[in-house]
Image 1 (cartoon, rainbow, N blue to C red):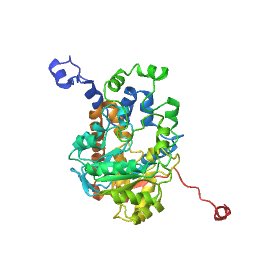
Image 2: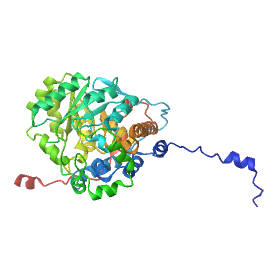
Image 3: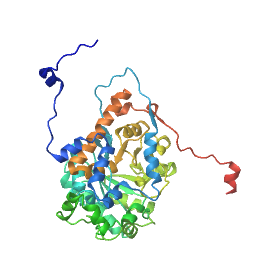
Length: 419
């Protein structure tokens, strides 16, 4: 029989420790977020539908983005046992400089639309974490403004080649003058992808008020207060600001960009140059032989060509083809520190986060971006310890198996020849 007794108040107090209430609402909701998916849910609650969907969505049926995330889910890790790693080193040297973590913040457009602190929050958080920040040509903070927010850290600039080439040339010169050390020459946006969520929402820059947007805004007064009481939302590097995203991109971008344009920008740019938007082995080899400093395997977060190759799937074959001495980075679909560890194990020198950063921004401004970085750092460190590796250099392809969910159909040789 169980012996029973009256509860002892002193013992009860020892067993029950009440948590001190957190009165800061922003801090409280960010501390409740344990994953990037948690930050996404907070962001969705706090952001008007058009702005959230612009961030969250991708092109057409959103197949590319879905597949990219599935690719990371379809990873099997192979830990080593009896290999204690109580302390792990997450630092990496990338493109001639240090990063405290194996990821940086990717370039994102219209960033102040998601939350008014925009690129300033991203650059400041990157500076505090010791990682690079990348400013987009379609950013809503100037090159000089980002430099002021991150004066001593690493700033990178993402360049689109415009129909008016002189705009691109001048942006290149300004980024160099401001001390940005790496240029991301972007090649996957000759025209705008079909971002159907934006069309259905009537999304435009600047936002256009309709009955639907007003109704959607009612439970989110804080977003509209920020939007209406801060400087006008506009592109910091472009003079044209009106229209849908597709209209803006189609008006500005030039589908005729070529290796000749790359050569011109290469001559203008004194720092490192990487090509962003590479999606096959052949282009990777050609770019390596052309003398660029690296590539980013990317399908633009699934926002351009739907059903494009999954960058994470391409990674092993590209690394094998280009060799170990050429910088290969990867983005698209990263939502967990384990995704980053798997990428490094399969040959990536570095990774970039886009939506994960923006979910944090929408959830809580600068503090939300800090939370994004902290979550990913914790997940990276824990994954490394569980794998039994103390540094990124110890990660190898033997630690990861990419499970096959999407298997190419093998065609009969005669059928292929007949085509």
